[in-house]
Image 1 (cartoon, one colour):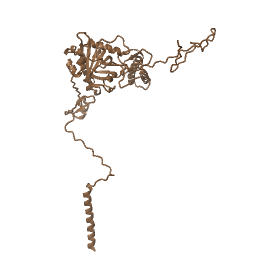
Image 2 (cartoon, one colour; image 1 turned 135 degrees about the vertical axis):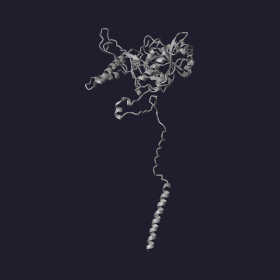
Image 3 (cartoon, one colour; image 1 turned 90 degrees about the vertical axis):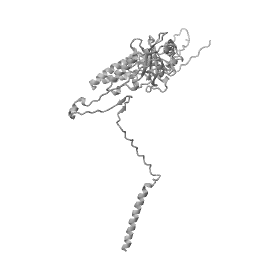
Image 4 (cartoon, one colour; image 1 turned 120 degrees about the horizontal axis):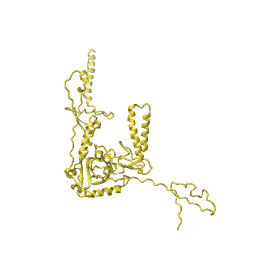
Length: 444
């Protein structure tokens, strides 16, 4: 009996041992059923970076080399009180570019330029570089020094290298002078004119309803941005008059009120070019000073690819940037252009300005006159091998006012009867209809 009991216990132990071994052996090889969820893949950790990462790139394209240098010092309390114990030195290295001088160098940027304007061959040379090029980059460098402690205000790499050359040219036969720039093209969507366009064209960032090219208003139609400017003025004046406004804030508001009042007066008195409809370019303010300088209203050409586009100098921009044209020109060159998307990022646009050609009186653009005037100026520098682009007026015509029908006077029954109110042509105003009704015309 004891032997049978011992044998049974041994058999149970042996069976349990065999079951556990079998479970351990087959468990890793079991295939999950189709109803089980698919396990998520384990993220792969990137390999460690060897060496020291000391080079970064700022948002504006400036390459940044950084390093930390330490020297033994005194105790922490002493070093904390010494401002020279923890110092960040900023040093910006910038290479000032060399301007293109010859026609061959210009052709590297605008390959078809010598073919489009063959007269430039007799006008461009090594001595043609304008002092404006040096002045432009001196201004850029001065701005870099002034804003070095404000990295967010530094010129971007794109805007620092935005000008290939500035040349002062003169045709040897006609003596017609021209200022040639090679640059990229940013977009100017500024400007407004209630006389021609009573509704606004939108207000992108940094939009201004003014341009340097302006003229006295022709009609009483209000500027489309006048109401918004007056509302901003009212809010600013209310905040300035509030008793809770801090004195520091009032100083800023006082300046804002002065500026807004001037803007309101200007919008009431003048009309301006419209960036979305008028072909014009923008030049730095520094280019408008000195002998033979360009001025607002001077006629100009924009050469890109195979096209020559008539334009005028319509606005004056900051002194440290070059290469900007109205949205109308930008859209013609590149349909994908927007106020936030420049049509040409490379330095492949040639701007040719004719100093001293502005009309004595400014007014709404006459696109036919613009083309004819630019064609005459092109002929004076040797002509072009392709016709100039012909701009079309894309501003919708103003609605035609509905004429009032002419009242018909009924004949008097007798010659001696005085006409009553219903028969007098001047007794009461005639009725006005939404659609004029023509009266029958007697046959001759």
